[in-house]
Amino acid sequence: MKKPLFVLLALATVLSFAPTASADSFSYSFNGSGFDASLTFTANQVVGDPGVYQINSVAGTIFSAGNDILSPVSFNVPVYADPNGTNPSTAYFPNVSFIFDNLLTPNSAQILNFNGVLFDVSGLYFNLYSNNGIYQWADTGTYTNTDNLSDPIVDPPISGTPEPSSLLLFATGLIALAAIFYRNARTQRSVQNL
Image (spheres, rainbow, N blue to C red):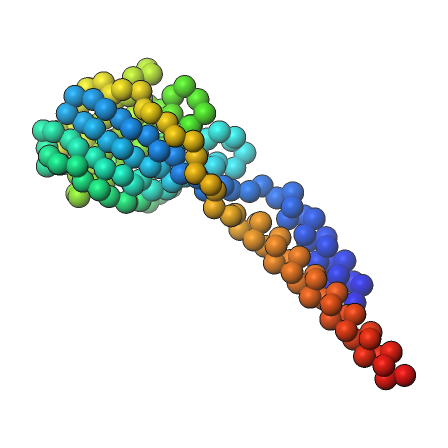
């Protein structure tokens, strides 16, 4: 019984030092000429690169004059991902292409880089990015837009989602406790039988 318990404790120790991924939500408001958006990005921290997050999905409301979204539209969509997994990536559409990496740096002066984030709202793809510190947007409806957006208003991250290694560590602890209780109950039955 000592060997399995030792193995479980060793596994718990290794998992407690394993790198963890944290899923957080970050909310921003962007405003500009013909473009208003209140967005929440759900992102996982990039392992080994503190302060950098890979955006998984975008939710919120958006208004974009000059194309099909003339009234605020609510949405919750995954970000556009390159099927080849390259980063930064290029998405090709008729008459336009976008470079994107879907990276977010919430604790820096520039939350999005030049590549920015690409997402689809009702069949219209939006690319939000920062060009020399000025936030801009482009979409597949107007193809390009150099309107400057206000600096985004940032909310602090919402509570993180438990990472798999924490859940596995918790399960390992429960198994170890169950093994200890089983051993004690078995020892008590052996003593009673004598």
